[in-house]
Image: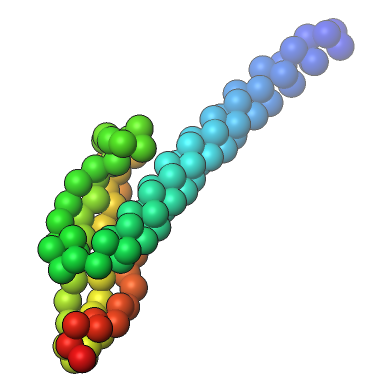
Length: 115
């Protein structure tokens, strides 16, 4: 009788515990993708700023060289309050469970060519 009670308890608890574990694993995988996309975005934004070319800021591409061809990026530059300071925005798009997700980073740069 005690064995049946133990088996019944396991039968009730095990599916709930496994469901919780599955949910945790899914959230962890989503967090890893978001962290990867954010790291790639930060790296690409720094590269764009270092290139110091106006055309570099209005471009797009992917991260094939880094081993992630499925992650896309697009950059844009806009004047910010005047022509001396500009806002550079980088948008990184990646797929997570067949849904498109975006991470957007922005920074301000000083346009020294207007001096």
